[in-house]
Image 1 (cartoon, rainbow, N blue to C red):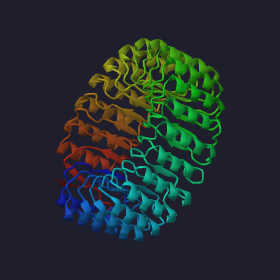
Image 2: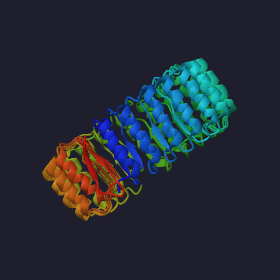
Image 3: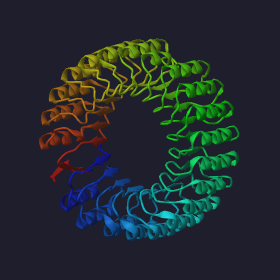
Image 4: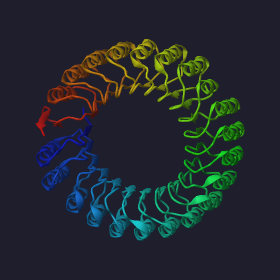
Length: 607
C-alpha cells in the first residue's frame, strides 16, 4: 500500500491538480504528499484545499516552490481552519510575504493538529513576523516553526521574542539567514529569560557579533529549557566565544552548542576549553571552520582530559596538523565520555593518524572517528584499522594497499560496524581485499564504497562474499562504473543473501539488461528494503522487468528510479505493480500522475 506519494517537478497544472484532489477526497492510505515545484494555479489550489477538508489520512503536505504567494496563502490558511489530520505543512520558497503570513497566522489560531510549519524563504518581513508572533500567543499545538531565509531582522525578532514570552507550546524556532544583528539577539535573549518551553533556537548565518553573543550567553545563565543553540556563521569572534564560555560555566541544560564559522581562533578555543572543565551539561560542541590550529587543539585536548559530559566534538575544516592531532590523541587517553570526533578537512597525515591510533589503544569510549579529506595514505590507514566502531576515511589517498591494511584489521576486529571509504582509489584489487575481509568479519554492518572505481570485477568479488555474509546491512556502490555484468553478479548474490537491507547502485550506467537481473534477484530476495537505481539508463523494458520483480517481492519498501529513461509505458507497468507490492516510498521522475483510490483500481491520468 502506497503511503508516500512524490510528485515533485511533474509539471502539474490545474487540471492534474483537480484529478489529484478528487483522488484525495476518497483516499485512506496516502499520508505524505510531495507537490513541490509544479505549476498549480489558483483553481488547482482551490480544488486541493477543498479536498483536504474531507481527507482524513494525509498528515504531511509539501508545497515547496509552488508560487503560492499571498493570495493563495489565504486558501492554504483555510486548510488549517478545517483539516483535522494534517500535522506538517511545508511552504518553503513560495513568496507569501507579510500578507500571506498574516493569513496563516489567523489559521493557526483555530487549528488543533498542526505541529510543524515551514515558512522558510518566503519574503516575510517585520510585519509578517508580528502577525505570526500574535498567532503563537493563541496557538497551543504548534511545536516547530521554520522562518529561515526571510527578512525578519531586529524588529521582527523583537516581535517573535514577545511571542515567546506567552507561548507554551513551541519547542523549535528556526531563524537562520534573517539579518538579525546584536539588537535582535538582545530581544531574543530577553524572551529566553521568560520562556520555559523552547528547546532549540537556530540563529545560523545572521549578523550577530560579540555583543549579541554576550546577551545570549547572559540568558543561558537564567534559562532552564534551551537544549540546542546554533550560532554558526555569525561574527562573534574570539570575544563572543569568551562570552559563551562564561554562560556555559553556569548553564545546566544546554546540550548542544554550534558556533562553526565564527573565526574564534585559538584564543576562542582556549576559552571554550576552560569552560569544558567546569560545564556538566554540554554534550555536543561544533567548532567547524574556526581557524583553529595546533595550539587551539592543544587547549581543547586539555579540556577533554577534565570534561565528563561531552560526547561529540566537531573540528572540521580547521588548520589542525599532525602536532595538534598528537595533542588530541593524548587527551583521548584520559577522556571517558567522547564518542564522536570529527577531524575531516584538516591537515592530518600519516603521523597524525598514527598518533590517533596510539591514543585509541588506551581509549575504550570513542566509537566514531571522521578523518575524511585529509592527507592520510595507505600507511596511515594501517594504523587505524582496528580501533573503532565507525571509521570515516572518505576522500583521502587510500588505494588497494591501504584497503588491504584495513582488511587485516577487520579480520581481528570485533567492534567496527561502519566503514566509509568513498572517494578513494580502491579499485578492483582493493575491492577484492575488502570482499575477503567480509568473509571473516562478523561485526561490519555498513560499507560505503561510493566512487571507488571498483567496476565489474570488483563488484563480482563483493557479490561472492555477499552470498554468505550474515552481518552487512547497508552497501553503497554508487558511481563505481559497474555495468550489466557486475550487476548480474550482485543480483545473483541477492538470491542467497538474507541480511542486506539497503543497496545503492546510483549512477552506474545500469541499463535494461541489468534491471532484468536485479528483478530476478528481487523475486527471490527476502531481506532488501531499499534499492537506489537513480541516475542510470533504465528504460521502459527495464521498468517492466522491475515491475514483474516487485509483484513477487515481499520486503522492498523504497525504490529510487529517478533520472532514468523510463517513459509512459514503463511508468504504467510500475504503477500497476505498486498496487500489489510492499513499496511505500517510490521516487521516480515520470510524465504520469499516479492517483491512488482506496475503493477503486489504480487510475492513471496524463499530465
